[in-house]
Length: 340
Length: 106
Image (tube, rainbow over all chains, first blue to last red; front, side):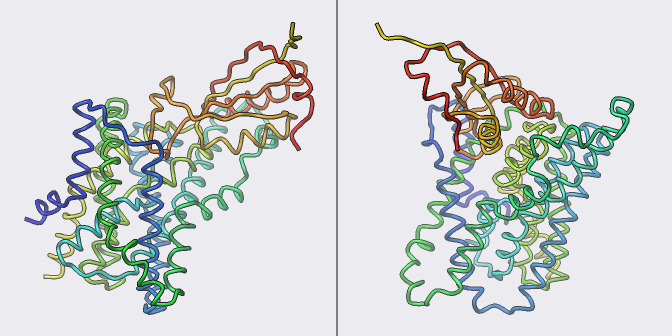
C-alpha cells in the first residue's frame, strides 16, 4: 500500500528515529541551531531547483497558482478560526494565533512530500513551489486581523473601565510595530527571502553555472532532508509531551484541520489549477500543513495574549507528524482515485 | 583597594522573538548598553529548551543607575500587561567603571 511505502522512506524513518530517541530518553542532542542551518539549505536548494524549472514555466499558470495560493492562505485560517471557536476550548486570541499557523505552510512537510513523490516516481509541476513561497505570509496577516478583532471585542466586554474606547491610551506608546510593521515582517520573513531569492537566482542564472550546483542542490538534498527530519522528530516528540496541556479536543483539531485543508488543496490543485496527480498532491500538502518556523515568532510578537504552547504543540507535535506519516500518502491516494 | 560603585542590573528572560522590541525600548529609554544570551529552562510558560533555534529563549542584561531606570521599567511593565511573557528581576551590583553606564546608546 502507498501508506506503507511512505513510512519506508529514509527521511520518514529518520523522523521516526528522532521521535524514538526522545521517547527512550536518549542523550542524543544535535548541535544548537542545526535545524535552522539545515532548513536554510533546504529552502535554498529547493528554491534554486524550482527557479531553474520555472524559467521554462507558463506565466499564466504561474500567476493563476499565485492567486490561488493567496486565496488558500486567506481562507484557511478563517475556517480554522471558526472551528476553533466552535470547540469552545480556546479563547478568540488563541484561536486567531492557532489558525494563522494552519493557513501558513510547512516547508518541511512540503519537502517530505517531494521526497515521497520522487521515490514513487510521480511527476509534479514546479508551480506549487511558488505557492509555497506565497503562502507563508497571508495567514499571518489574517491571524493579526482576527486577533485585533478579538482584542477589540474583549475590550468592549470589559467596558466601563475605559469609557472613551481606551485603545489610544494603551497602544500609543510602545509601538506594537503597528500593523504596517507587522505586514512588513510577514513579507520580509527569512524563509520567504531565501525561497524567493533562490528561485530568482535559479531562474536567471546561466544553465552552465546551474549545472555546477547540481551536486549541492540535488545529489545531497535527500540526505540533508533526512538529517533535518531526524532532528524534527526529536522536537515533535518533545512537543507531544505537552499534549495533556492541550486536551484531546484541540489535539483532534490538529488532525481534522489538516484533513480539511488537504481536501481543499486537492480541489484547488486538481480541479481548478488542473495539475497532474503529483502537482495536486503538493497543493493538498500546502493546504494541510501548519507553519512552525515563520508564524510562531510572528504570533509571539503580535498576539502575546495567545498561549504559545497551544500553537506549537498543535503544529509541531501533532499536525507535522500526522502529515509526514499519514497525510502525504493519504492526499496522494485521494488525488489518484479522483484521477482514476 | 579598587573603588567600586553601586549600579543596578536589570535581567529579563523572554522569547527571542521579542529581542528587537526590547532593544528598541533600550534605545528609547536611555540604556548605555546591553548583553543578550541564549537561555534554556522552564517556568510559567512551560519548558523553553528548544535547541532548533526556531523558538528559543534569551536572557537580557542591562546595567543602569537606579535613578535612570524607572522609564525602562515602566515600559517593561506595559509590555507585561499587554500579555508578553517577560520575567524581570533586578539586582544590586558594583562596577569598577561607572562612567560606562552614563552615556546612552546612540
